[in-house]
Length: 402
Figure 1 (tube, rainbow, N blue to C red):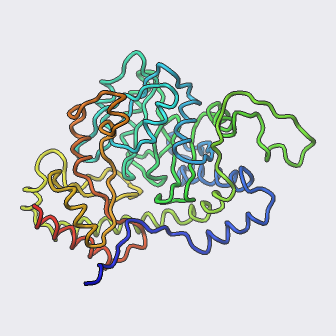
Figure 2 (figure 1 turned 180 degrees about the vertical axis):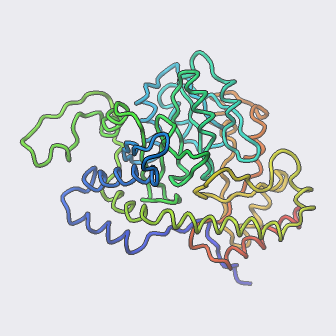
Figure 3 (figure 1 turned 120 degrees about the horizontal axis):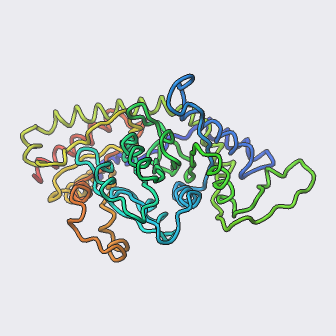
């Protein structure tokens, strides 16, 4: 018996335009931190305020600083906002390791709070309750491509004199309540990792509305030196200085050359992703009877994520019962369906469990979502026949295992 045809969890969308753009950089002087990076930073800033001419609370394009990854972007954003030993930053357990790692790497403490049952997004009421004398800021995570409630979080931050750093690894395209990433936060950090909607394999960026934060970000991403090579090129020799301890954390011109053509197409691809999501949801409701869903996934956390505003649709997740989740993962894999889990509640992972001493039961909603979640194949060139195979295998697995 032949193996089932594989439906990959992810396939990138890079093509001729991206490869042509990348090759042009090879014929130029700068391969890193040069004119392509500067152009991409301007273009991403303009994208984040598209259609806001004459309106919007912060219609001026944010200042964008390209980084080597979202992880390094989070780290230097916190550094630029003076986070250090003894400080506390409130965040969510429903995230990837880079969120809490950035806090810990600066000697600060992540203070976790629970999430909303329907979306998995950080709960603003829980944030407000967690603010203490050592709290320096809040790091919400825009999960799966849906924006956290930034209006509520901004209100809390203003009342308590806290910063907001948005972990926006899951997209640049999202909007909620008329707010986009980087509009109400003091910094928003993006990822261009291999599986992201906009990708250079690795890479990231930080958007900020504050000139002093931008200035420090540019130093911190380049070792802490006062002038980058591109800033000195074409002028009489200038000495540079080491102003503070920094990192090697810059975006390269090769990365930026891959990203710039994609930025022109990102909205069209977001629309395609939304169509795939809507079809997934409609067909899953047809394939899995409501009576079975009620039996399989009762209680606070729904089988399908609740929608808030405009999503980037970076991921499509389902939430079957915890008792059969891992068996369903195995069933999908055996039938050639690529999957992932985004995410297990982070305080239950070994390192943080030993460090933070937060037992199971500390954040019941995040834990339930982490125990139940499966991410299904999701990308613009996923075909209807591939999607139908995924839906069929999911439905078969739920009927068999349930």
